[in-house]
Image (tube, rainbow, N blue to C red):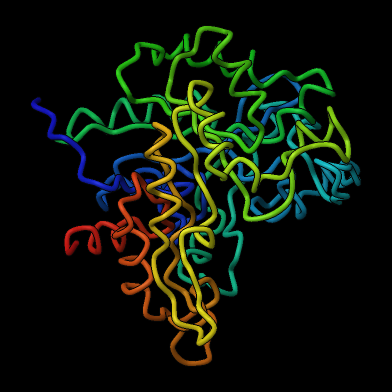
Length: 340
C-alpha cells in the first residue's frame, strides 16, 4: 500500500481517543486511528515481574476496578512517587497475570459520562499488545501510523529494581520496531531515561516533555535544590543545549498560548520559532474541548463538561507552526487542521 505523507501538524491520540473511550484501552487506540490520528500515545509503567503495561500512572485506582476487588484489598498502600505521597494500588505490586484480570474505567467520569458508560468493557494492555495493534491497523490505513511512547517515573522504577530503559529496549527489539523507519517516538519528563534508551541502541526520535513549572525529578534526585527548572530548557540557550541530545520538546499548551491583561488569548509562535531555530521539533499537550480544560476566554456556559469554543483554541495552537499536538478527541483536532 502506498503511504501518504502525514499532514502538518501531526495529531497524536492522547492515550488513544480517551475523550470517547476509557484511556489506554484497545478501543481507545483503535478509535483514535479510525478518527484520523497519525499516532497514539501509550504511557508506560512496569509490573512486579517486569512486564511493561500501558497506564497513565503506576497508581491505578482511578483507571481500573482494582478498588472493588476483594482479593487485592490488602495491596492498597501509600508510596512516594517523584516526591509526592500517593495512596492506592500500584502496578509494581502486581504480576501481569493479576493485572490482566482487571477492567479499565474512565478516569474523569463526571466530565465524560459517555466514556464512563464503557467502564468494565475492556481489559488492560501490555506495551507489546500496542505494538501489535499498530502493526495490524497499518495494514488498512493509507497513512503512516506511529507510536509516541511515554516512559513514566523512570527514576522511581529504577530505584526499585525495574529499569524501564532496559525493559523498554527489550520490548522494542522483540517487536521489530527498532528499524529507524520513523514509527517510534520516545518521550519522557526525565531526560536521563531518554539518554539511557539511546545508549541501549534504540534510535527512535527522542522528545523531552516539559512542564509549565517545576523541575524534572531525575535532576532533583541527582542534584537536589540545585536542579535546573524546566523553564531553563526553554530559553534560547537551553534549547540549543538540548539539540543533539533530543530531537524535540513537548510542552504544556499554556506555554503556547499568551494571555494579555484583558484576557485575550493569542498563539505564542515565538517559542515554536525558537525551537525550530535550535533544530528541534516542538509538540504540545493537551487539546481538549471541554470548558474545564479550555482557556477562560474560550469557555461557554457554566457546565464544565460542555464543549466550549474549542475550535478557536485549537486553531490558535495549531496555527503557530507547531509540529504536533496531543488530543483527547483526535477527530476534532483533525477537523481544525483541515481548516488551517
